[in-house]
Length: 186
Image (cartoon, rainbow, N blue to C red; front, side, top):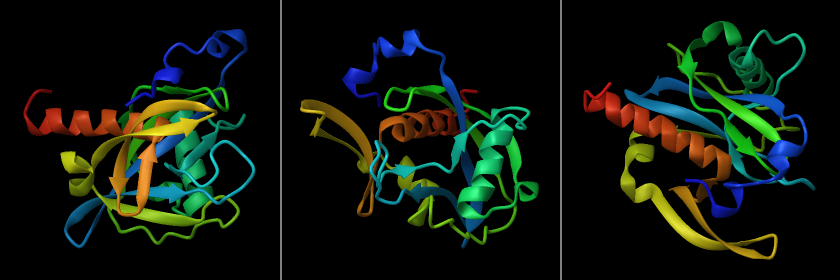
């Protein structure tokens, strides 16, 4: 799911990477597994208005990037960290625009979250059924003009929203892990 310009970015080797953690949070609603994504507010910045996972920058007091993801999830969408069981992590993804290496964690809640989004960081919480994300019909590709360059962009089409970029790459890996588990391949 990586757009072509991201693959061999020379900036990645020039300066120290900043670290961030994000969280795929599984929970059941009405008998179906869901994952929350956030819609970022519009602002003057590279990730304005995008669909993302809750998470953010590692702080000095965070023991690891899973703790970062859980802390940031609490700050952004109001889910208490004490209610989240961290199950593991996926492959870190480099984000050239912000020079972050983002590590996705996977977590589970036994109850339906009562989301309380921070309006400074989150325009809306999107509750996506896992079954919808696993449906191949929600995977699309389009040519987008990004920075005066036409780029073939893969994305997940969820309702009126497009999940693309680093979030789509992390989501694609998560869904592949789930498919393999369901198929009994590990």
